[in-house]
Structure formats: structure tokens, C-alpha cells
Image 1 (cartoon, rainbow, N blue to C red):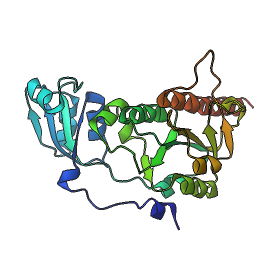
Image 2: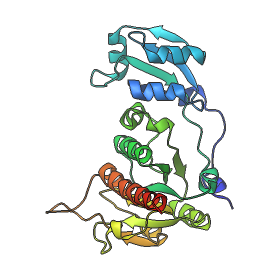
Image 3: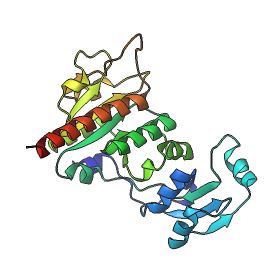
Length: 261
């Protein structure tokens, strides 16, 4: 049984009820640049770089007063005078992602459901070269304006894969040559002691519940991010950024050493 089948990948076109609004300059400009994203309608308070992109793609553009956007999204929303009505992204193909040759890193989240945290994780995933962010479909938030805003455009560029059974997907990815490190503050092994330069997956759990037993059992190692003082845990987005940076740093140092030979 393929990973794609286990994910129950839904490829049917979304209906009108599934459409969503994205707002904020980075989120909207990135969505307009993404050919996989079907835009329906662009609202803006003044002309900008998004208008030309929308016209190129045949998306209707309306110039509106700021108070219309304030009423639609709330005065606390930092919409920056721009919003895009669009379809959700099609589900990514995890089999294709895993089949890409060469080294690569994946980030797997267990029981993480805060959309802003997931958005921030996507930013770090893009910054440090993760192929994808993978999480269970059950309990995972849908695409929202808040998630896209926190991702600052990374939602359009880093695949966010929702799967039915995370533990089974780990086993399938092992067959594709990946190995996995579960991050746990109580682990004896520091993350920096592992070789993170190959085909690796970093597995993180929510601050409250951590990584589930079956997911943890599917991992090859447990490792910790050493911390100073009395801190017991890190915000999930901060921990993901540190872990991804360590993998990126090791890969950069390895590549630099190879070039010097």
C-alpha cells in the first residue's frame, strides 16, 4: 500500500464552500506567484505589486476602502490593505517528495494544532531547506488566513502534508532511505551529536502532549536541544527552527569541507 493511498489524498476540485481568504502582503503575493493556487478575487486598498500578478493570471481586482477589509477580517487583523479569495492548495504528493534523490530533511509534527505556530514552523522549514512539513490530518487546522500570515509566504512554497497515520508514514519513509530523530527534552543524547546531513526527519510533538508512543517508537533516536537555566520546554516553532538550523549547519559545514578537498 503506497503512502499516497494511506494519506487518502483527495484530488477532487474544492467546491465554493471550501474557498478561503488570505490577507497580508507576503501571503497574498506568494499565493499569486504559486501556479498551484487558484485565485478568485483580489481586494486592495491601493495599487501594488499584487495587482500586476493578478492581472497576468486573469484574477479580478477590486480597489476598496480599508474599512471594508476591517469589517471582513476584524480590526485586529494585520491585512496591510490586501486580501485574496482563493481555493485551498491541492494535497501534496508525499510519494513524489520522498522519491526526490539525494540528501534532504523533513519535519514531522505530532499533535500540533495552533495555526500560527504551524505558520511559523513553515517559515523555518523554508529558511533551512526542509522538503516538507508532515502532520496528522486528525486535529490539524485547515488553511486559514492566520496560518498563511504567520508563514509569510512559506505556505505556498513548502509542502504541508496531512497524513492519516503518522507512525505508518514514518515506516514508509524509512523504506525511501530516511531515518528519524524524535526531539525530547528529557533525552540524554544532544541533537548536535547526531549526523543530520543525510536523508533525515526531525519529529516534534506539542508542548502539552509531546510525541505519541507509536510515533516515538517508529523513530530511530531520541535527542534533546540542550537548554540553559530552568526552562523545561520551547515553543514548537522555536524548537523546530533550532533543530532545522542544526541540520542545515551540519550540511553546510560538510559541503564546505568537501569543497576544500
